[in-house]
Length: 472
Ligand code: UDX
Image (spheres, rainbow, N blue to C red):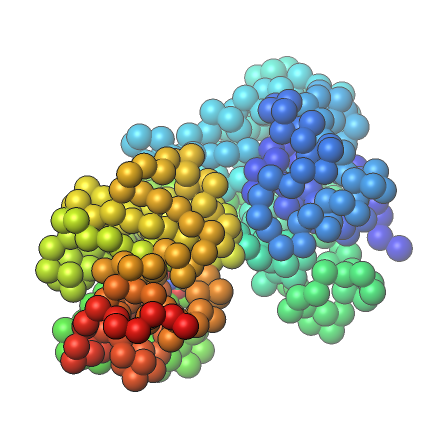
């Protein structure tokens, strides 16, 4: 029987909320602390503020059993817990480095309540020296060094599959510089590393099982901090790399899907994160690449490669914009249907979404946009309120209705299941410009579309006439 450990998670954003729900799911008693009283009240009443598979079920189950509670009282939570996970935001500051003021404030507040041994765990993505700063902050507040350890346990969850990623991880990284802290962290993850969780009939299904356990990697705290930044920067680099290869493919009329498949079958390269498109977005990659570059610069290490990764990512959006312009000759007074607002499919998150940036560029160029997204419309409306030239719709076919072209900007699985014949007759001109390569170009041509995608040969119909036949 695994030990039930009293845990505090500070911060109820994406990482904090998912971590809190999953710690409760593997048998621990969790207090999730946030200083936003309205949010805490809503969470205690069962509101789930983010769109994430399995999260409503887990929160519902463990709120009911009392294994997870939400509070604003960090002092009480600290005293009641053995481990305190810091999962507050580390936004990008103007210089590119991570703004650690929230982490600093939380560390000071925790320090004021420490009366017995506590393990403080960095869960937010932080630069490599942060554990030293947290330790110094706590010591400065008069806490004896024997009463706490600062550790790093980075999270590798992806939005949309965050719960599965947590409970069925590729690896669990525990960075600790003391045995006591390493033992407590290992005990927290024991239900996953021993496989007892996967034997439960009510376990969230995923890739791991009792015969395929997640490896536990014990490292120094600094190595754990570096693993997180280096992993995200490497994945971003993979995306920028394939995007440049896609541009090369366009220049010679080759298909980037074939090239990516050929590269990805080499086990040293791997086939994932080789999908060409309009560039990466989201709350992690842009911020983490910039922060990692800044860390290297501060330490006197030239990591110009990361500046190049960022530059390619910016140019990829610009390139797609030019593709739309050249397909339509001019963008002034064009009516464009847009599918996708979220930074990727499966989430309602619009932070650093390439889709929103492109919509802004298209509006500035004089087009009007009617946009659809399965989950992100409400969030998008807060950032870009509807107006005469920007409408939102719950119906993907309404976005295409009478449009001069349809643009696909997010890789929602739903979009690849759309009725293409219906779309063909809904559009004013049968032009689809796909920034996520969702469709087979030959199928699109057979259906009579002019179909432009990223890094694949363009398909043109002989006549891009206004449809004479209405659907159905
Ligand atoms: C990422 C990391 O994957 C995760 O490990 C980390 O903890 C947080 O950051 P997330 O931001 O949820 O997760 O999204 P991810 O699925 O990694 O996609 C990031 C961006 O890259 C998206 O905009 C996506 O559309 C884009 N992408 C991804 C590509 O353009 N091509 C690809 O092949 C993969």
